[in-house]
Image (cartoon, rainbow over all chains, first blue to last red; front, side):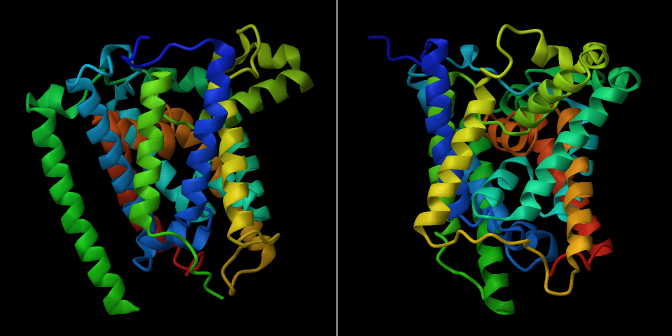
Length: 191
Length: 169
């Protein structure tokens, strides 16, 4: 049996795997407190740092595993779809996203977790996300030039800087560790 | 009032990271969320206004496939709902409510929820994904796109929170 990932599965199998992986995604989001808009927005008011704690822990764990499996030849990263970089559209999108996050109290995945814990405001946010998607599709012809601008292709930090991914990961781990320490200290002080 | 039966954010984060790693290994891509909303909107619009929707070139990527609803991210988001529902029910966290700051009226909360949602939906399309697809999945791949999205989101979120202090907290 071929053990090198990504494991190619049939479409039916793929959709079943999607539900199972999504189940764990939602379970960890809710159990981490990420279905709660008070906790979700806490970081922006410096009252609750659960979002960066969950997010950067998840990124570090997944990233370490990703590059470890790759080095061990257990994962063929050339067959993994890497998020493409379009510099300015992603900066602009991230900036607008931050405002929407603060205003609504959710992001797309956490709005689903919010609804699953009984929050009707999360359902209203989900409707808003649909409307926002439609607005994008409506003005896409005028936005297309910007949307396709500043393409960098499959640009990863190790590839752009020429550094080993382990150096990049070590730096990120140290930065996250310092950040977690400061957040814990700050939360203890203000509580 | 504060329900504090949540797990340590580091435990939940590690679980989320392992789920994302399993997704890379099994599926060959990361976790997503926002594209399910865009997909459902395009399918819904096609039901209501087929001719008009046919002319929206951005939606063609969802509609010009054999079975639009047999979509990986859509199934994953359905799983997300079930997983969060199971977690909320078993931990006693499920409660039907309109979650808002005590000082905020219901009408204001609904307006904030829908307008914030519109911004998120639009921004996710512009950035080619949201906190799941771009920030988490791209961040873990060490993709530049993931990290610039994260930085822009936090910087703008801090500024927005300072200016809109009365919405939360």
